[in-house]
Image (tube, rainbow, N blue to C red; front, side, top):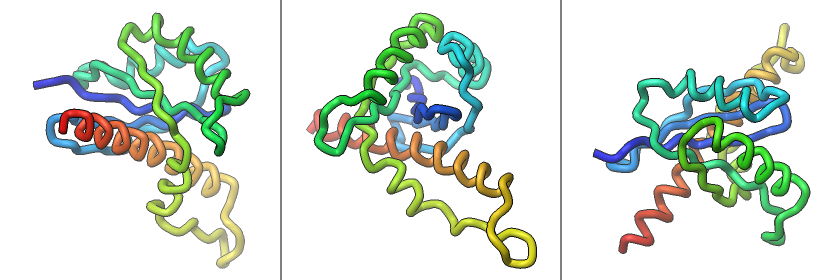
Length: 153
């Protein structure tokens, strides 16, 4: 049996995580964590989360521009991965994450209403953003598994 994949949706403030079973194709959102100031601290937090899960590889979303070119965010992500990978001690690959957030938002339940039917509270908005981050990581892994299956055909 092969190991599991961990999907990483890297944001400025949060990191969405999902896990996939390549053999079965099953993907599930895992958790959203607060991003640290240092990628090695992010690696330590993620290592604690995946301990005992048989994760053998990490797939990190690469935020390409709509044109497909790498912009500032993609360069920042590559820099984060360069510092993160030695600290996590697992192979890390990059996958185009364009449209993952859009797909994730379409899968998420409607935003909750606030008190008395008003706008959502700050906590509700933050909770929804964290959910979208986890779902985006799951969509990223679904894309990765589909690409791997296609390359084996």
